[in-house]
Length: 122
Image 1: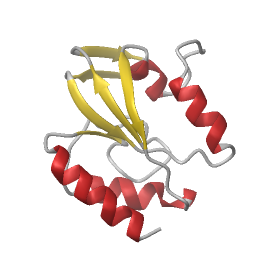
Image 2 (image 1 turned 90 degrees about the vertical axis):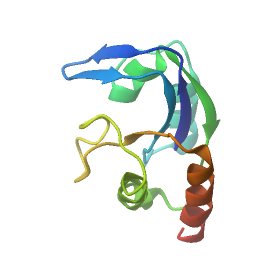
Image 3 (image 1 turned 60 degrees about the horizontal axis):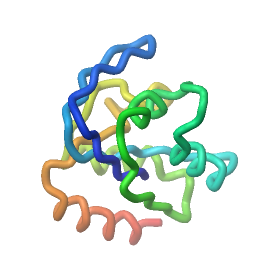
Image 4 (image 1 turned 30 degrees about the vertical axis):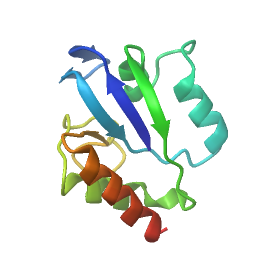
């Protein structure tokens, strides 16, 4: 998971279009093949734009990275976040039966408690 600060309202157009409001977000991903390489790619400012998250990170800041030992929990984590937060439909979730993998965080304390609970289920 990436904790992201979106510095200003954005319009993302990468085949799909989203209006992303300025604020704090969490992005859920799996990085199934090489976790270290994927995280480094997300943190890099010099990359070819490929995934939805690449377009968002172009104008945002990654504040923190949360790594969970079980890579196969992306769907479980995204569904749990969806119980508490909302996000742009279809963002980063084209391969999962969830509405989004990007959640706008309106209550950071709720997120902190939820992260602790998610660590317990891995």
